Image (tube, rainbow, N blue to C red):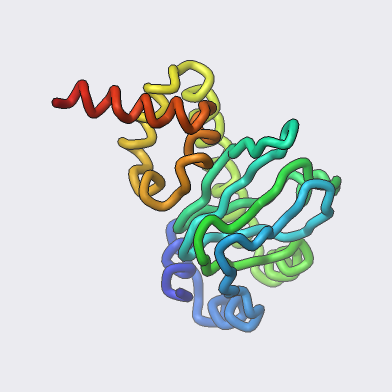
Length: 192
């Protein structure tokens, strides 16, 4: 797992053995069981997540119904809004699968950044990349039909189809599970 983490970091900055050892000394790697809720609505947090293996999701509960907003899988990073804003969370984060995560907190990050300023550069580059991706995803969601969203998912994140329960996938696409079933049938019919 540490090689995956260091490989990811090296996409942004070069990392020395000393820096690797400092990161390993922080005991970042955690195995988390499927169904574990990492963050609840109303909870304060200082923790950020990096998925080495598995899948986590963010969701709101609105009128008793879960509304999935994102899935994070291998090599995805999630810093909840509440960490940045220092406010209670307005959504939940839970594990869709058994996962191996690196979990850091703002104090840890500040310590590493003060010892090794280039990590701040990595964080800035990563933040810019994530912001651009989120904008593209949001624009795509707002300008496409449910069928186009599903076809986009098939093209860009086909692994989610097998990994995520249908009701969560439907919620993520902004439709009901029954509509997703009909949509899948319609797409299969077009292919035959």
